[in-house]
Image (cartoon, rainbow, N blue to C red):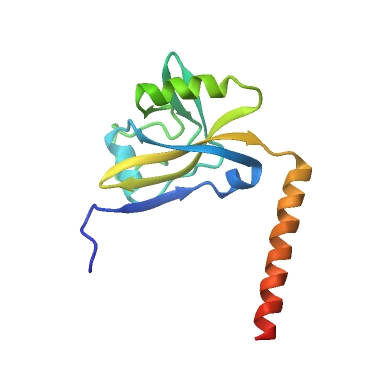
Length: 156
């Protein structure tokens, strides 16, 4: 059955590096307050979450350092590519995030940017930074899993 236009989840950008650099504790889906040319640029499938992070300031959550490039057909109404963008969350979620981000070593990182039912959303994660030995341990476990799967395929 074909999917209706505007329904479902259309991923624009993902931050794969975040899962490598952080232990993900909890995830939240938030709306984005955007201008018109930002939405058009996102619909063209262009964005980068690599250096992005979120912070809580004055009871509001702001997405910082996420790059949404200029809309090529835009005029003087174009947006600034790395401007802070307000995240739209429920008051209770913001209250939880305020308490949890004040704990030592916790931060908010964007995991993915997508359209859900025609509205721009960002998935943010409450995360703790990984140490170098944690990263090496994860890589070793992943390689061991691959080796086991290869051995099972060869055996069949």
